Length: 178
Image 1 (cartoon, helix red, strand yellow):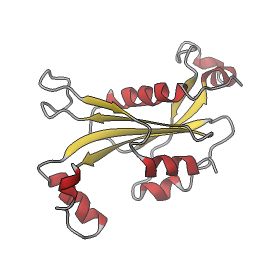
Image 2 (cartoon, helix red, strand yellow):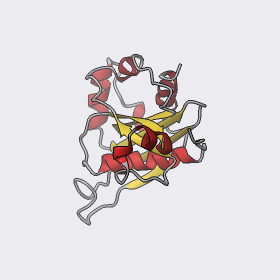
Image 3 (cartoon, rainbow, N blue to C red):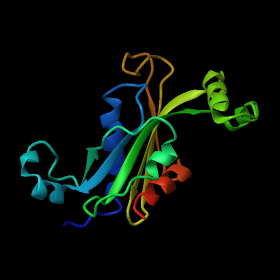
């Protein structure tokens, strides 16, 4: 199996985000196994021509996650050795720090509903990706306010990349390799 560099993870995270973005907004969380491309092509020769042979990692979409607590769903996952990493794409609502103090002190569903309805709320898609060795990459696409998908010329989605964007989520993803 070819070696995967830690520099390959941000590229895979961007690829996952771009793939999910083709489906538009309002999608459920999606999980991807990250497999070394050389290994994948040696095990599945029928994929030649369907995946980029020059890519170090190939994201492989997994079955839909169950509804409910994402953390609980991730806690049930164990990956085979061939999977060197994983990525999760999910839509989130972001608020500026000063708006968080305006949220009610209540159960998670009530807080989430209040966050979605807050005038300063911004919708975003977060992709958190990890490798078995602890390497982390995150990509965040902030939904444009100009249109439904940012593709109508009225708005452009903003992309932010930083490994520290989702520490709780990346920790949960790393735990799937325990």
